[in-house]
Each structure stands twice: as C-alpha cells, then as structure tokens.
Length: 257
Length: 257
DNA sequence: CGAATCTTTGAACTGAGTCAATTAAAGTGG
DNA sequence: CCACTTTAATTGACTCAGTTCAAAGATTCG
Image 1 (cartoon, each protein chain N blue to C red):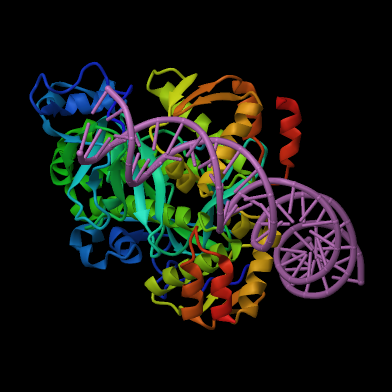
Image 2 (image 1 turned 180 degrees about the horizontal axis):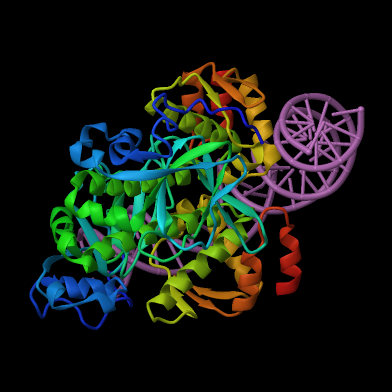
C-alpha cells in the first residue's frame, strides 16, 4: 500500500543485533524503561518483519505468541458473517498485539500490517515462565492488558458520539494523543490507514469520513493533505469533541466558524 | 430499583460459610471448575454485598481489588466531560470487574450494581502472589482479561451495525448467548438494566431502543413485557442480526414479516 | 501508460435524533 | 393502604444528518 518508512521507528532499532532483542528493549518500547534490569537483559526475543498488507495474526489462529509493535503500524480486524471487515483498533509503536488470545487457545481477531513493520515475537509460554521470577515481565503483561482495555473504552466513547463529525474529531484527537505519548509531534500526524479502515473503526460509511474531514477543514480545525493531517485549531477541535448525546451539533459549529 | 432476587444466583451461595468463599468456588463460578484443587481450596476470599444502585467501583478509584460477580448484575460506566454516562458493558454471574485497573494505579471506569448483588473481593496483590505458585489462579486472571477483551470486540461489532433495529437484535442475542453459557434459558431473558442504559451502551437515543424493541415485536421476533423478553423466532432474529453495512435493512424485514 | 484502488463530491431518500406529550410503574409519605 | 411524586417507557411529529447509489478525480502500482 505504501512502503514509506514509518515515522514511529525509534532510532534504536534491529539489524545491529541480527534479528533479536532483549526483554529490556521491550520494556523500553512498551513505556516501562524503569523496570529494565540485568535480569531482563538476559531474556531474549526474536524480531519479525511484516510487510505492508501482510497478516501477522489470522483470526482463529492458535494462541502462541504476543507481539510488540516495534516499528510500523497494524489494524486489528474481525470479519463478520457477511464478510464485512470490522476494524477493532489500530496498533503502533509500543502496542501489544494478540492479547485477545489470553486464557483461550485461539485468537478471536486478526492483525494486518498497514505498512512495512517490525514486531517482537514474545512466545506466551516463555513470557509466562519468566513472569514468575521477574516482576518486570509480569508487569509488562498486566500493563498491556490494562492498556488494551482502556483503549477499547476510548473506542466505545468514540463510537457513541451522536454526529459523525464529532466521531472523526475524537478520532483525530485520539491519534494525536497517542503520538504525543510517544514523544512525537501532536500537531502533524500521518494517517497510516485508509478512509475505509477509519470508517469501519468508527462505524460509519467511508463517504461520511471524507465529508466529516472536509467539514473539519472548513471549520478551520484541521488541514488535510492526502494522509497528512495538521491540527490547526486544537481548542476548537476539543470543543467539538465534547459534544455528546443530548446536545445539538450546530451549537459547536457557530463557535468554530 | 428492583429488589427481586436475580435469577443468576447459583444454588451454592454465601451465608453458610459466613462471608467468605474459597478460590475453588471462584474457579467454579468463573467457568474453570476443572482447575479447582486442594491448593485452591486453601485460598480464601471475602464476599461483599452490594445493594441495587450502589457503586462498587468508582471511576478514578485506586486499583486494589478485582471482583467476581457471584450473584446479581452490574454496569460498567464512564462519565464523560459533559456529564453523559457512557455504559461500557454489563456484568453478570461469573464476570470479573475492575480489570481496567490492570497495570496501572487507578480504575478508568466505574461499576454500579443494577440489583442487589454479591461479589467476591479478590485483592490483586494476593491474587498476584498466589498466581506464581498456582497455575489455576494465574489462568483465572488471564482468562478474565481475555474474556473481557472478547466482549469489548463484540460490543464494537454491535455498535457498528448500521441500523438501530439490528443493534438491538444483536444486543438481545448477545444477552441470550451469555445466559445460555451459564446454563439458563436462552428463550426467556430478563433485562436487568433500564432502556436508558441499553441506549447508552448501544450508542443510540433511548427512544430509539423503545422503537426498535416494538419493531422487533411487530416483526414477530420477540415478545416484550416490561423487562422480560421472550425470543419467539430466533432464526428471524439471527437473520436480522447479520445485516451489516452495505446491505439495505429492508431486505431482512420482508423475510421476517 | 494503464489498471486498480482510494478519495472526493453530488443527489435522493430515509432512518434516527430531538422535542413534546402521554401512559405506566415504582417509590414516598401521610 | 392509598394519594402523591418521581422516574421509566412508549408513541407521535418533524427535521436533518448519514447512508446509499453513482460518478468523477487522484494516487499508487505494475
């Protein structure tokens, strides 16, 4: 789809050490650098390269590994009975994939790379063993699960917005916030997914995503060029986002225009 | 709200042993009876009674315990900036509450009892300690997290339905399926939440839930009396549920009418 | 350069939200 | 125990936002 290197690659990347990394690296990438130690230095994991469009995790596949996105981006998907692809979420640097297999023997959702990406392969059995003696790895697992649940709650909040313009506004802010957490620019952001993916994620028609984006541009909230978005007026965007069920969408417009 | 005893109470309930139960009990209630052993018999947990309308877990509260619903029902909620109460999910017998605190120090969502209920209080620190030496409790935790994630995916699927009638149909089927898993009737089910709660959960106006329910009744799919629902024509309901984005809602109606 | 996909825009229709009013149920207090 | 109050649920009318269908640009890739 687009082979451009992701802006989310950390400087400290693979290649040097062949195709492996240590648990300490994982802790750094997962946002828990303070937990890295000599003990976690001793635990190694393999890296795996996944090309754009490739499926890292198939729906229904046996649960064996967790994956930490180390570079690139993915979408979590589930195909429903009619063949409609429901996008459940997006994963970028530092996110863990495959958590829905926890406690059962197969994955309920799949993961597809949106660009050329690299993941750390963490065999669950190993992770589990190590986690008994190593609090850091135990914490990593718990944190990953908790973060995933948090994100799903965000998604539900997002989908419950009464107007599609609000949904898209919330989506953009959510992306910006995740970027910020990674230390990247919160003003300019790149959409690594198609409008269709966004539409599926938000639960609207893909034409509606297009229209909502141009509406936000006309409101002066953002600027859009292809898949690059610039947040021009963050306060206005935040004001829009706040609108929940029970308020008329037009109020906010007047203020933004 | 309604003090009637829930139909989800298992026969083997508290009182006898005072206000405590064993980890083996928990494993039974959580659907992992095969993992109970002498070891888990030795681990005890306190029970806590929560009256209807009471808050078991406050949003933002420090993360200390996980709770297993042993009798009764709850809703997971999050209040947004404007004061709108977003319902994230419902918990009944066998479900674990408080998982969103995993790996962090506070809960992001709250839990409110929908009727008089009983929960098992599982201090996370204890659970964590025991889980190192006891695979059964470790499994319990993993399974609970995985199940929660699965359920959130179901919810997203539900919310992405293009028509509100389909959303409600899916909601009813989801409830029925959970009942079945507990060994209860899948034909007759009791809504333990208000229409408003359902509306918030589905992301629609509460009037719309009312209308969708009466529409389903007129389609001959279900029968509704107050908060009791009977599934009259499950095949038709399943047919309705299948309709995803991209198909016209009216096709299914013709078939059901 | 052409094929395929992604994206945008337009037009028509309709389903869902909002407002409003009525009915029903449940909880309160005399 | 029954009037009274409050909250929940249903129904109607109206309007508008979003879906669907259709077609035209734009971009990417072979």
